[in-house]
Length: 157
Image (cartoon, helix red, strand yellow):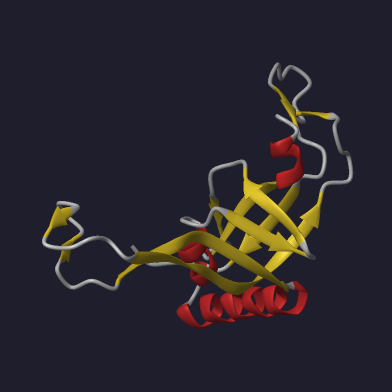
């Protein structure tokens, strides 16, 4: 089926969106669970069975896994208020947590952040409180996450 938009126009539109993303994006840091490396100093010790011919003399080294990405960031301005759908008959009310942040990342950021546990923005740690939302003008090129500050997690929220 022929498209109403030529491939050159599609490319120009996608380049304009990428340019807009690069213009307004700021650096964030995404952290995954630390990688656990067990270092055994006794070659006779069998870690799988925890015995055999030797005693354990090991240390566990935790290696932090993180990457930096560019993201467009939006800090919520109506903190702690209910958000209601624009339709007057809508009965779904969504309670947004105080300090919530929305980020939009590109495909590279999405591939890493989908497995990330914490995200650092402007020196504050956040956790993902939503599933990803894919969007783009012609195809999914950007991905949105909603984040809550980790201090609200410690407060039991």
